[in-house]
Image (cartoon, rainbow, N blue to C red):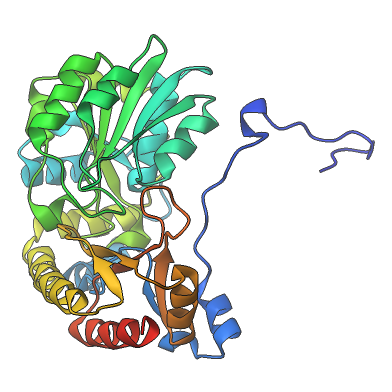
Length: 371
């Protein structure tokens, strides 16, 4: 890249980014439609773990209030109203929250506060790649600790990996992409015995109902990261939050941007958090479908399916090239996440749990593609 009048001088990027592996952005639906020749409305995204249900209650409430929205003003930089709603939802004091633009901004804030260049981060793999990305952006080195064969945590291995430069341990619980949950006792042990910050991403908490949030009452090095993108059906609104002890929250707020959320997003979030019936109905429907989809997938001889407590299911393609199966499903309008090259889940694909109609179609197409 060039800059200024002297085209011979190239812009220099940071050394930490010279061999940086960026996040693999999802292919836009319009591009998939162009490649397959299918209308965009026939493309079903089962690769992003989002809810198939729209938050009709929150949207209806927003429509009534929209004319009074102060979009000409910046939002309250403390996000006070949303923190009150989060306090009522979680049972934690309003000063225990950092409101973020989705969970990813929460991860970014954690690394900006805790990491210096050359520090180390421990990550059990396979897992969500953003932990690596936000850490490497800050110049940290990654120490990956493989999960056990059943995808459980190797707690002893993770503790053994802690060194003098270790600053953060990242956990996804339940874990993406494997769909399993690690007991709260393991999380607490890591926080107590590691002596470093432990950040637990609970993006899929509502689908399993188990959390380490109460451990934050006792330990100031535990940070819970959550989102309204999944169970609350608000992926497009970009709402997330961190939960920690008050002293830890004060440190995290040192680098939090003052206005990364919009007035409209905040209104949606407040409604969703104070009218929980809709979310609970959607979660119940998804859990029911997850169980049905899992049983249906178990009957397909060409795949090995793994149990899940989330809104997605991981499966391994047997005796076939998973890339070819993935491409075949895309041609039929079903877009799954291709994990076939990822260590720990080689040969695997991951699907979001959809509506009953979509799941029936998915079962038929996986069976056909893996014969």
